[in-house]
Amino acid sequence: MLTVQAIVLRYADYREADRMLTLFSLERGKISAAVKGVRKSTAKLRNAAEIFTYGEYVLAQSKGRYTVVQFNPINTFFDLRNDMDKLSSGVLLLNICEETILEESTEPQLFVLLLRCLEQICYGKSTVLDMLSVFLLKYCEESGYAPVLHTCVHCGTEKELQFIDLQEGGVCCKGCAADTDLIPVSAGVLYLMEKILSMPTDIVFKLKFSREQSKEIYRLLSQYLVIHLEKRPKIMDYMQKYNFI
Image (cartoon, rainbow, N blue to C red; front, side, top):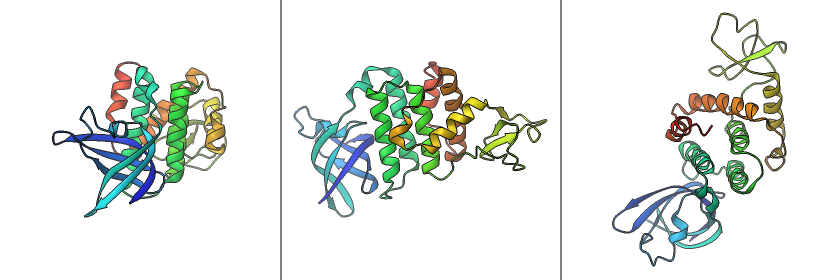
């Protein structure tokens, strides 16, 4: 038996009543696990097989495959389902983790980041945009490709850093950006991004953002993340289409 604390990233129905879960666990990273008969109305493990659900999963292993045999809930994040902005933002966080975390590759810091951001989106006072800004930047940092924010990625100068080169992974000075289509970035946003990277996850939620600053950070980092993922999560298009962001 294997016991893990895990968050459900995704599920897929199969057969008449079974469900396959993609779990992000604190102890083992991403794990695929089946839940037998869970779609029956009388199923005891029904709450274990919904996205966002966080709890203690007891898994039996046979022939290299896991099956959920016991579940102790910790948080279902039910309130996320009552607000479309919160729901879509939470799904984006899950999609990013699912796309990038390897099977049974331990990522404890990313696990805590996901958990804390889901808590803040669901129950915190910060806006959804603020949480997306924090998650995306911290996620890039933990994954090893945080953008360079202190020096120009082309010439190394620390002066007139007014643009960002997403392909090169950092800020660009006014001189190097001449005659290019690089994205301008405000000094206030650069300052906030530096603060986010320098602060522990549990403290960073105390930062104050304006809505325009949150929008700018999200737009920059969502584009930056797509470049590194080499794939755009579909939920991003949905959020953009319905003007959630």
